[in-house]
Length: 364
Image (cartoon, rainbow, N blue to C red):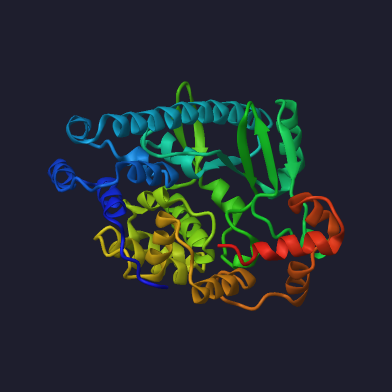
């Protein structure tokens, strides 16, 4: 990937949003800003990348140096994500009580988990939705529970009957409850990643954490951390839908202790790549790894070179570990059934919608 020269505004954004920036470093960075600094661009990219939540680690210093309009936009952003996170955690409690009443094993994942464990601050870590892990055998009951709560529930439409039989998807149920989006997972990743992760074992190992007047189940510490690492890798490896701010979730990982679990899950390659990326990224060597350069693509919102697009296209057509897909997988990935195309890409004749979908493969 081409090594990018970062604009001063983006370099400053990464420095100020570093999860462990000291008061002295924070003030020194702000003092170094010149009169040509484009504050409008700075705050636009901060909000677009969800890094704005991390820009007030030392509020008393920030108020001395941020222009008033920039400071107000950052505070407004933080207030917005705070209120949304509180709503999400109310939804977590409602879901937990409903699932608990029918003795359905479950665990809450990702952003909500970080908030519940106080590993992320409500005004810093933007959380979009509720991610729920359930026993794959309980999908029908969970759908009934969600509908009983008044949720609008949708289930995944597979590309083919073969895909449906293989149950490849990791989150085949989506719901909207009280305006909150819920992704219901039956496994942490798609089957075709070839990671060896057993959902019943994960649910057996859950740890209950306090949330207001109750306790809710979350993955064990090591399993949750490794999932965070591999989830970030999934998006970076494919070059798609990556939140730049989620890099900060990787800051407090105990890589040495996680290594045996990564081996057990058969995720060594991804784990080692992410370890190197994280170490160099937090040292400010943003372009030293391919993953780091990929993050910069999302930070800058810049177009990829043709060679870079080719790399990501190849990755989207094969397994995350580079192994060859089943022949039926390849065929139906290329030519899915019409109900799949119409559901996700709109109504119309097969070839017209197929071409619309195919063009998306080349959009990065």
